[in-house]
Amino acid sequence: MISKTMEAALNHQVNRELYSAYLYLSMSAYFESATLKGCAKWMRVQATEEQAHAMKIYDYVIARGGKITLEAIEEPQGKWTSAGKVFEEVYAHEQKVTAMINALVELSTKEKDHATFEILQWFVKEQVEEEEHAGDILARIKMIGDVPGHLFCLDHHLGKRE
Ligand SMILES: [Fe+2]
Ligand SMILES: [Fe+2]
Image (cartoon, rainbow, N blue to C red; front, side):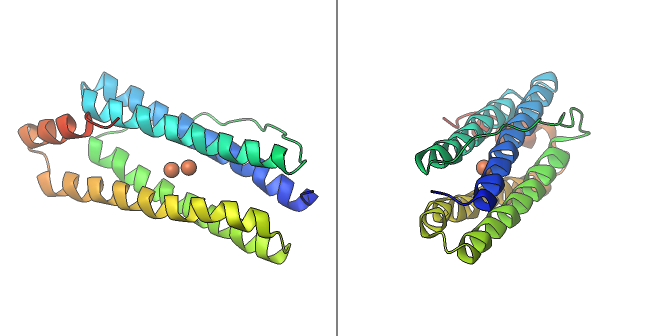
């Protein structure tokens, strides 16, 4: 049985993962309107991954005999001024999520909850990838600057994400 403290913290993380999905879906919609179809596709896949993260925690809480309580998901930002600004936000957002996961790991240690500690290790590794991918795209966007042809190439590349 999971402790009430750990249960509440994990329920909140379900909300944060769903908010991440919502934010990336909003970014996808922005890219659709900016005719950057590849970036829109990348963000849509990213949103689906965040939903899967939420469900991984959701299923785990239930498996441990805990209760799921869904919180309100706030409205995400809907407008950006450039593709670069969007990816700057993705990178910053993933760094915030990493801090949240680290705080959960610390709580699981404090609670002596080894099972939660174990499942959180998957998220620790996932965040390394999330930051790496977002940082990599951001670096490339900065490199190409305002050259439309180069942005078109990057957009095409990002659209290949499955
Ligand atoms: Fe996530
Ligand atoms: Fe993420």
